[in-house]
Length: 552
Image 1 (cartoon, rainbow, N blue to C red):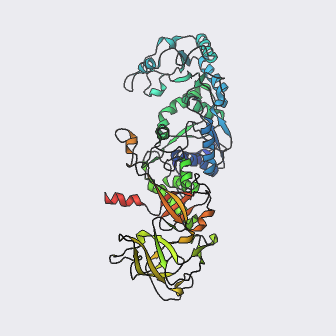
Image 2 (spheres, helix red, strand yellow):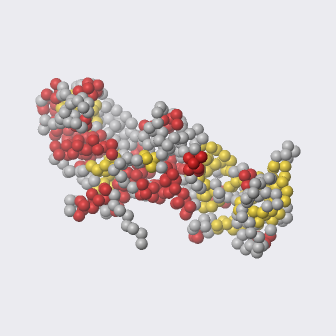
Image 3 (cartoon, helix red, strand yellow):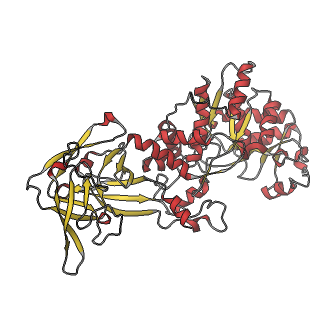
């Protein structure tokens, strides 16, 4: 029997809360800002929040934190919803922080009426200076002495559009000597005359994230508001607002965000890569975005498995991308159709094979007995990889060479009889003979060979374009290296090669996953047309980077 998986610290908290009757059921939320595409780090948060809802028979809301109209767009909203559903999750309710703009405004008015908020005319530079430093207390300015009536009037005028961007802000009145800088009279509303993707031009003042977040959680009765570690200093303000407003006491809990080797997770940096055309877009297969991984051929099950394996921790760490690739390989090995594709062809002529052609059965996936077989055309002219032939091989070379025998996968044993060269002495092919009784599945030849090669029938080979994707960065942690992170981009992260595939490839769709025998895992790209099939390499058969590290 396998051991029961231990609980992570958030599950322990939830189970204790349910046991003591604090909540009858749990409600979590996933609150992305629609200012970019989701990446693998968000996938961890999605799996955690939605996974908890499923495990404890609770629910999870999707709430878009759309409080900054300058950077947000419905394109991002649509992509986020698509990614969550593709990962296999469904939300109980779809909300937006903008749904609560009227209520949040009322909350701000309540704080003003309690003498806990004031309108400040200071510039952002003045406010920063007045806040002090982690070792020096801050000092309040004269605007903190405004009366409740004056603050109510000014805040109403801010809402009415009387003032320009940055002319005034609304600040919570807490404690300018608090060791936590976030508690030193934080800004909770600012003026932004910008068109909002949902509320259009109704509002010209917008709540800050720290003000909108906790109150939105409270409005929805979120029981467990799960954030990443950088929000720990924000928690006291989250609690302060809920306490002073006397609303449903949602509670924030923090876990370590996902940091992955050979990539960057900052939306700002990912946007740079897109805008400066280092990649083709948000869904470029080299990007750590969920849409990029989907296009590259990653399965949702692989990403969920990866998120489960890395677990939920209280300390930040750097996860090796090789673990993600391992999860991808493990899944694809079970589901991918096997196909033969030759990248650098060498023509083999089987001199004693008849002029006719036969169809040979070959397994679609030996790991899945239900996947059936496909038929491979075979005749006297076939293509093999140039690397699978040597005129003067070293000892223990088990591929094709003069006088040596190899098995052709799902076909026959052949023996090289003659090397074919052009006028300059370059090898252009080889002449071989085949053993008629050596047919795969009914071999009665009694001959044993150590090498098995993949091949494609020359007359039926389908020319395809293959995009060999590699890691986008050359260094393990480009986000923390000195200088510009873009200086560490891997110039060889994309290599485009030609391939010659067996004809069954013509039925491929973008939903199919393939293992090109002895090459790696691949999928059909959306750029493909009826005239041109384009395949993306999802991942290699083995961890090629591990060899590079050992070499170094």
